[in-house]
Amino acid sequence: MGKYTRQQHITSMLKQRKKLFKQSLVEQFGCSPKTIYRDMQELNANGLLPNFYDERHKAYRLDTRHYIEIQGLWFTPEELHALLLIQQLTEKLELPQKVFSYGAHIYSVTQPFTLLG
Image (cartoon, rainbow, N blue to C red; front, side, top):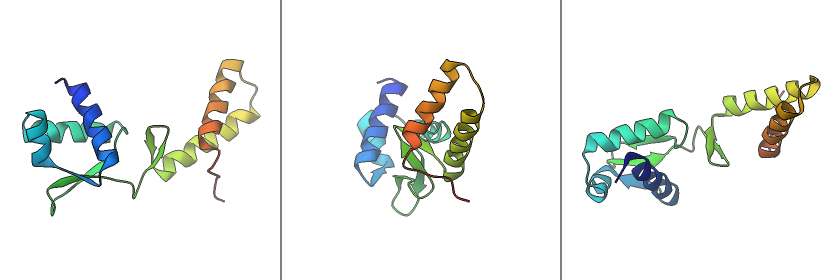
């Protein structure tokens, strides 16, 4: 199984369950613990699946304490705030239609959220 497919399976599995045991992943995918570690680090670094390793349970957990998911992308509250701020600033500028439609898309996925302060 290729890296991309394995990471898709891991993403789907972790969203469905509370935790994924490292040894189970190693056995299921027939790879080394280092490969699972690298996959989880890459998913985390790319913002595709924020996770952390629970040493006590020897399992990976989804980190929903510090991230918010919007249409498959994960943002910290600070990042989401910055996106909303950019969207509000671009509304005040006269920009080409293509840029404006991107700003409208940001607004459509962030409508439930409002800026604080």
